[in-house]
Image (cartoon, rainbow, N blue to C red):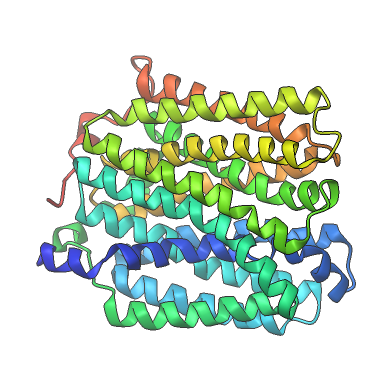
Length: 418
C-alpha cells in the first residue's frame, strides 16, 4: 500500500469532518429541548431521553462498525455507517411522536458512531509513535470542539426555524459528508492486518489488559464530564441566568476556544517529546482544580445572584476544565491500543464499546444527581477527576507487578505500520 499517498488522501479536514459530525449530532438541539417537548406534547424528561438514547445507539454502533472495518475494510464500513446516519436523520426530521423520535435517534447514533471508531482505526493504521500522538492531539481538539459548536449552531437554527430544523441541518450535513467520503476517503487497512487474531482472542487479551482499563476510564470519565455539562448547562444558564437559546449557544465559543488551545498545547508538548503520562497528569490536575473552585464557589452561594461577573467567572473555570480534558483525551486515545495493531478494528470496537458504556453511565448518574442548583455538577466533576487520577496512577504509571497484564505472546501483537 502506498502509505504516503493514503496519508495525503486522509487529510486533516476529512478527519475533522468524520470525527466531528457524531459529536455535533449529540448536542446541536440541546437549546431546543424545551421547544421539542412542547412540539411533541411530552414532558422535559422525555425530551432529555433523546440525548440518553443516543449513547446506547452509539455504543452498539462502535462495536458493529469496528468489527465490520476488519472484515470489509475501513472505507466500506465508513460509507455504510454514514449512509445509515443519513437515513436515521431523515427519520428524526419526519418524526411526529416521541417514541418515533427515540427509535430514529437510536438508528442515527448507530450510524454516526462509524465516524468515531473507524476514523480512529484509520489513524492507528497509518501512524505510530510521536506522530500518532500529534495526530490524536488534533483528534482531541475536534472531539472537544465539535460538541461546543452544536449548541452554538442549534441555538440559531432553533430561533430561526424551530427544533425540527436541527434534524434537517443534520440530514444535509450527513449527505455532504457521505458524498465527500465517497470521493476522497482511502482504504487504510494493511494487507498484513487481514491476518488478524480471532475475535475471542482479541477480546480476552484486551479486557485482561489493565492499561487498557485505565485508558478507558480516563476517556470515559472525561467524556462523561463533557456530556454531563451539556445535559446540565441549558437548565443552569437558560433558567438560572435567564439566557436566551442563542445566548446560551454563544457560550460554546468559550468552550471551543479553550478546547482548541488545549489541542495546540498537546500537539506542541508531544513534538517536544514529553511523555503522554505527564500530559495526561497535567490535564487531570487542571480538571480537579477547576472542579474544586466551582464547587467551593457554588457551595458558598456566590452564584446565587445571577450577574455578568459571576457568569464570566463560571465560564473561566469551565474553560479551564475543558482545557484539562483537551490534554487528557487525545493522549489516552493515542496510547490505549498501541499494542493491538493487528486486528485494530476489532480492538477499537471492543475498546470503544467499553468506554461508551462508561460515558452513558456517567451521564446518566449526572441526571440522577440533578436538583436544579449549581452544586451537584462541579461536585460530580470533582469526583470524576479523582477517579481519573486514580486510574492514571494505579493502572498506567505505577501498575502493580503481577496485575493482569498481557503476556509476552500479546506483546507480539504490536506491529507498527510504519
